Length: 482
Image 1 (tube, rainbow, N blue to C red):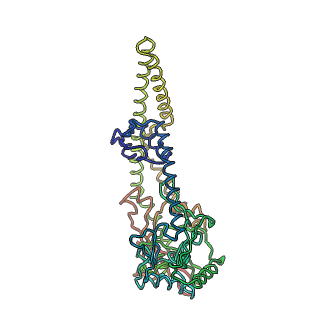
Image 2 (cartoon, rainbow, N blue to C red):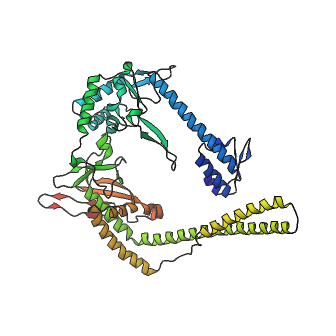
Image 3 (cartoon, rainbow, N blue to C red):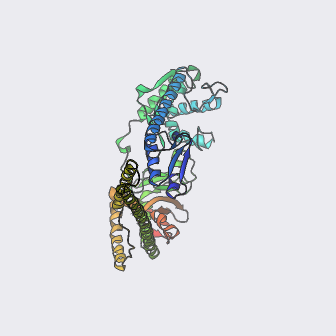
């Protein structure tokens, strides 16, 4: 609605009541403020034209009503949990009883899977190994397309995951997390509650695993939680979070080192659930070389430079036109206000009209004039179209050479600033295996050049770099391939 308001697609917003727009004081005030600035009225069916006072009152009442409803709902859920009934949501291994709200029964086939998971984990298997086997046997997961290690292992702080779900041992635990709304994005996010706020009810009729097996699983989880220092979280790498598997599209993560110390990477879907068709590893330094060499070739391409210059100038023209149009609109509004204020002052001076009516009107117009004047002063001056001089492009070429050298050295040495510079150019790197060359890989880079230049980005389509280990000689330097 706000986007269309900026495009002047309508002149008035009609609502049943203001709480239909929002039950948040900040949101409602922000909507009213923006629409008023654009000259668009809000009209409520029973209250007419909405003003600032009405927005403040209705916003407060709406927010209090919403928060009160949330408290009542949670109080109702707490009462159900005390009776051993579900507080909401479904849990793997159980099904709702038709016609009996909150009651659940054990699903036999899913219960067998849960017992198997607990037993195999206690016997020494890892969540990843268990997930791989379940996927191979095509056992339906609780949600999504496949079993993952995280589904089984869960999160210790939140008490989530199959291995930590106390319902499987006949104990219903509720209020582990609370939902909060991000004021910027509007998304609902979960936050863990302290254990003192958890509510527990005994439900022995819903137990699936025996207490001894459940306790043994918790002991093993505790033992595995003491991570060796060599396995602790390492510093962020140049391409952390950017790598994608060319076979299935999943993310990629580090997967140990070889005897020479080179870091390997592997598809996360292959590691976590075993669902990727390409489960083999790649060498991280080979992929990083491919990205650096690819960026070097593309940024030096004449087509990219010329297209960049053209796009740069087009954007400057667009910004100049937008800035000029806004200044022109504000100046026109300011001129109209000045003329109207002069007419009112003239009328008051000549005794035409009631001063008690014309005076407040003149004051209101003067306040609006001050607001527009301040906005006009804060508006940056109209942008001028700027052409790039040829010497600037030459300087760009020289700086690019130094940038490449600095980035290559800094990123590999763990320089966070250098790595961030690379990440500013790259959004995703999709890694493919080149089956025609031993140890060969190819990469597809998507980044800011794509967003800026569209189809003209990466005209060379640099996709290949490869390296191999030769016995007794070490790693051959990566060679870019087109």
